[in-house]
Amino acid sequence: SQQGEEDPQALSIQEGENATMNCSYKTSINNLQWYRQNSGRGLVHLILIRSNEREKHSGRLRVTLDTSKKSSSLLITASRAADTASYFCATDAAGNTGKLIFGQGTTLQVKP
Amino acid sequence: DAGVIQSPRHEVTEMGQEVTLRCKPISGHNSLFWYRQTMMRGLELLIYFNNNVPIDDSGMPEDRFSAKMPNASFSTLKIQPSEPRDSAVYFCASSLSEGLWGPQHFGDGTRLSIL
Image 1 (cartoon, chains in turn yellow, red):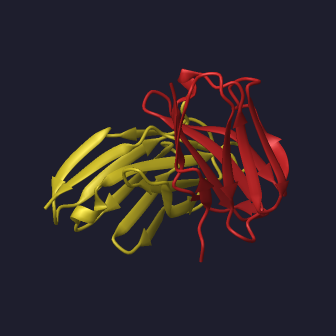
Image 2 (cartoon, each protein chain N blue to C red; image 1 turned 135 degrees about the horizontal axis):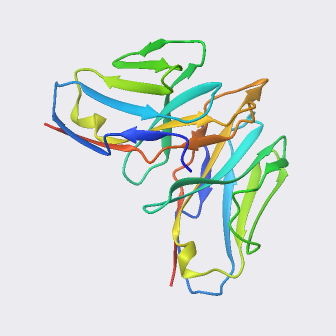
């Protein structure tokens, strides 16, 4: 079964608005990562948050992690048309094996 | 810096043929991952290597699939014989792991169509 589940599956917003995507997982983790995938391309790593961290920022990205609720959120502020992509959360399997399990992703469309 | 390089980008072949996908990881990375992505099943990990040694191949669907990493700069994923249900986008990714596992860097994938 999937470790990470994203919500919503699809999101459509206007340029300039904020976009929030959520991820829930089932077992304990060492870290949680967010990736972006543009159409026809490979995944690109955005941000990694460790289990002992609660919030992390990178440019217009803000990630939070709540290990008690086994959930994470990715916030993109002041969205741009170029942010249109699919976004995936990924969690490492228990035991620090390096094996990532990806969710099904959120498809974000930012309208100009 | 060169990223992960995969070849070919597209492959169309008939059922029963042997298919070989190739991957060159980022220089200096010591871990390599093969994934398969489909609309129905999402992104699935097939196999991964650490320091050229296969660590976990539990995601390899059948004996028709095999992967090798003869050296730190090259890996192959082979399907023999291929079947229509193998049609998918296959990604290779690499990362540097030094105690803790770092982010993975993906190639742009091979889009495989089995007729």
